[in-house]
Length: 340
Image 1 (cartoon, helix red, strand yellow):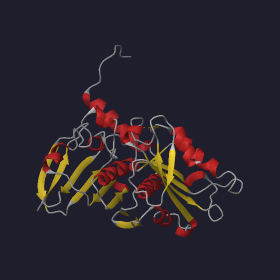
Image 2: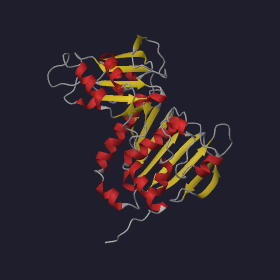
Image 3: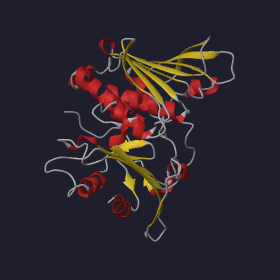
Image 4: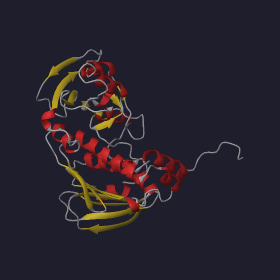
């Protein structure tokens, strides 16, 4: 047995970090889709090639400039934060600068992108270290196409330890559905092997989105409510109900629920909680939702409910989990009271 404590090499450190960020097919989709949404995309096309462990995500967002493409896959490189203060007031879905570098480490990464207003775009391939391998000009519409090929080809133990591909594809589907609820203004097209799998068409609110993949629901089975919430520094709350609170109000609560006399489920599988555009695991709020229906639903039945909080950036800490699914939320008790 080797004795003595030795510092790890940079390559090993980055490889371990990559395995924390990218742990499945769905994780690749999540990271690339978040980048597309941050770029302002309103149409996202996701193509999966399961047999080849390949994923392609195309969007009509703002695109990536020539200079940014050269360092896009570098470790901890991002356009979304600059200082420690920025880290405490995160307003984007991505911010750590780990996704593209992790994908370069674990797969063959290629990016095609064109900035709106340019006559041509660029095709870039990267080395496992995130350095530019090849860069050529191409004709492409404004936006970005990211291709990830041979995922986990250099980490077969990870690939062999994952659930079956059918289970992973279901996880991808769930990830996209949750993103669609948080961003109803986006149209999603998902393909397998260049054949249509499913689509989610844009709507005004999540009320038009949820019935597209819960087929037994109709929009009339759902009720939505949006509240403006004021959380002063002393922790007391003031709630003002409004039908015209904008989706991006700095502090608001959006609730979409199935009317209990029309729709309910055998499992609590469609009680989802989102914060600032991302579905999160916040058991306290999920239990609050279930408690609110305790006297309304039949015994052993559960509600259909989507809860989306818009929280000021300084009142939430995303640095809890590599997948950003767990958060530290200020004034959690006050939010629970308003949800109930």
